[in-house]
Length: 108
Image: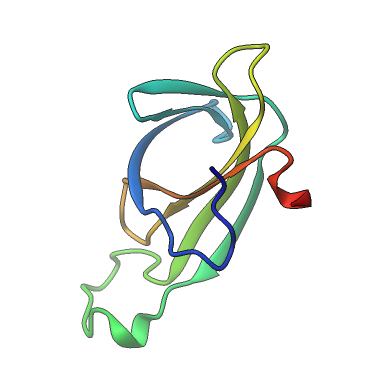
């Protein structure tokens, strides 16, 4: 099953293991460990801060940058690739699985 851009985000909590340089190595989702099999892509968006907290303590850090990673993952070396979109909200340590796309689904 593929999630397309028009669908609602999944927002499922996941665990992500990173290299020492901060690059995703693996994602634990649905009780399984998915290994990253291709170069991940990272980007940032801005949270809608005007609709969230109105006040923040001085020095609490970045309150508006939402971190995203697009990673191609697989369960085994012979299984099909899937694309996971990961997201982490400002000041949170919890990663969320925003969406899943199966390989070949983009062409459909």
